[in-house]
Length: 157
Image 1 (cartoon, rainbow, N blue to C red):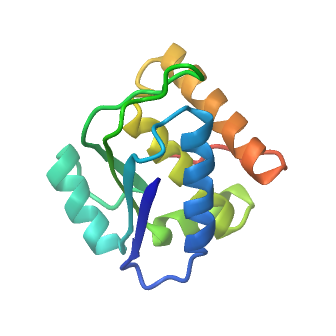
Image 2 (image 1 turned 90 degrees about the vertical axis):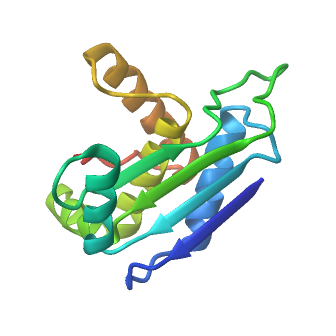
């Protein structure tokens, strides 16, 4: 699996753990082992620009996902075809504020946001209540499986 992290945020984050988490999530969802993923950590100014360009919404947000090949989760006997998952942009500055409000650390929030972004790349959404229930349950299950502890409360904007 090709997972690239580019930290342009100016905030120190455990990038290796983000890669390990991403690999874990993608393996759990039977994504082809040669799939490609890019994680970009950006500051509030860059995130606000992306938020306006991609969503036509003002202000910095916590995480944005840009799917490329519209891959979806596979099964044990039928993994996802090889392809480019896409890009996830995460803003550690926004994550820091959310982590403090939720009572957990920045790295826990970064893991939560990365998992959330990955699920968006794979077609999950939370616009409707049933979709939200499904997505957030899977998000909790994946985070708990990766960390071995209860997943932090959702802080997603």
